[in-house]
Amino acid sequence: MKEVSLALNELEKLAAKSATEAIDFDRQGLKGMAVSKYQRAIEILTKLCSLYPKAHQNGVYLEYIAQYKKRINELKGFETYEAESSAKSQKYEGKILREKPNVKWDEVIGLNEAKQAIRDSIIYPFKRPDFFPLGWPRGILLFGPPGCGKTLLAAATAKEIDAAFYCIDAASIMSKWLGESERNVAQLFENARLVSENGQPAIVFIDELDSLIGVRSEEVGGEVRMRNQFMKEMDGIIDKNKKLHVYVIGTTNKPWSLDGPFLRRFQKRIYIPIPSLQARRNILKLYGKRLFNMASDVDFQELAKHTEGYSGSDLYDVVQAVHLKAVREFFEAYKPDEARINLRHITMADFLLVLKERKPSVSLKMLDLYEKWYAQFKAL
Image 1 (tube, one colour):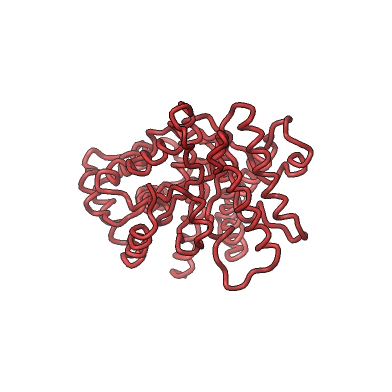
Image 2: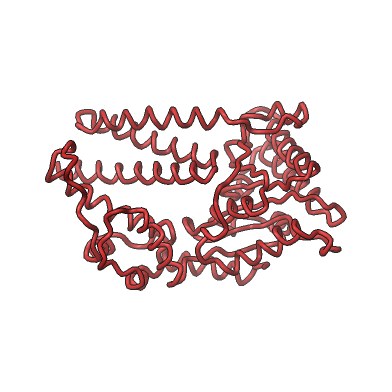
């Protein structure tokens, strides 16, 4: 019985994490990312209901599933491309969302070196293209451990220059039909160029780039043609003689999976590392501010010292786990409808207890691999 309870709690945490991330992406205007996270929360909650059909929480889970499905349908109802798109691009509508991120530049904590590289490559050229007679970089690769802010940085960049933001992944590009995948790639870039020619910059954001164009031991013909089409389109936008403001920002946790021809097309290769001490303090403080029941003895500077090696996502999980601990204690002690009773305050002791049970998700060995790859291929 205890094992069942532990498994149920872990799945609940995963569902809560996905739902919270979905709500954050939704708030930031990242509809495609929000849909993906809502779907993940639905998958976990559905699994919970099937694994534990007699659990008393199933009614609540089903309500959440219905809410998330409703929100997904609302998000998918948004217009994806402008009416000015060509007939080919109109055929492509519905596969990729053209988003309007709402992430401010100062919401990206730390990453000063990465921010400066982005300013040099995208923001300054857009604001004063006459200062760049040799052109400017249009392919940007953000790599590093998962959960360290790669997506957030790309979204903030789009917000800074009010760019059309095309958020894609392998599932939205690949097709089982002969020739369809390469046409999807061509139509995506055609639409981005049209937007740029009409005066608005465009950012094609490819999350988990390695899953789309990474090196594989075996490839079918469609994957090869799609990869070749992608390289052709990249060559078209990085042409120094063209003044297009179309940029490709790719993120990957596995930069070593990308081969030479693709790396060459990403003129900027930027490492997004584990947060520094000061960044960890600021991240913990940012997430802590969202909670209304934080005690005055919580010392974020001291907590930052205890979380060396934690990613930004790990830190989010720590704060969430501390809050869930207080919520669990409330439900174990009181009835849910006792509205006059609030959650107890979260203390420093709560954080230290949770940190004993939650370790970093990225190993030292993995960090060493990133450092070695960066030393060989960095391009700031």
